[in-house]
Figure 1 (tube, helix red, strand yellow):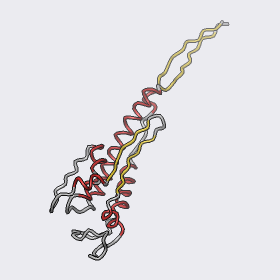
Figure 2 (figure 1 turned 90 degrees about the vertical axis):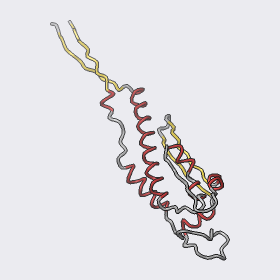
Figure 3 (figure 1 turned 180 degrees about the vertical axis):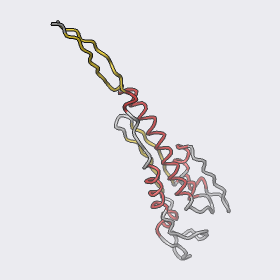
Figure 4 (figure 1 turned 90 degrees about the horizontal axis):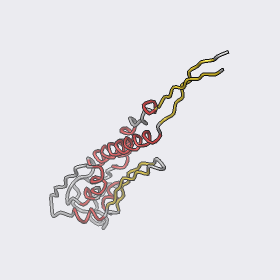
Length: 169
């Protein structure tokens, strides 16, 4: 008795899928960080440019055009020294993050307090808009809103089908 058949096997091209995943997550991370910066910087008033300049490192990494136009003598360089920001993409662990931090004392203070006292040495006395800014909460809301649309690439597009003919006696 002869037996004929057809078997279809499949495999996912993991190398292509991982590359697509990496490229897409990097793009999504940049988009989310961009939206975060938009929301956060809307809350940071500009006087000397120092507070806004703390965001320069992160802004440059995601291609965000951060304009700083001080109303008084520029303290942009000072602010830039007091802010850190980065994008990290660990392809092996599939971990994609952006970070921002600052130790600019009046920005930190204005994030949480309504600062108007001229007696408090941590208060920058020419505030255009005394705090609290709550830019972290607003940034988090923007992050969550923007990251809702992040999806993994469709693995079916990387599926390789192979037909096998079976002949048995």
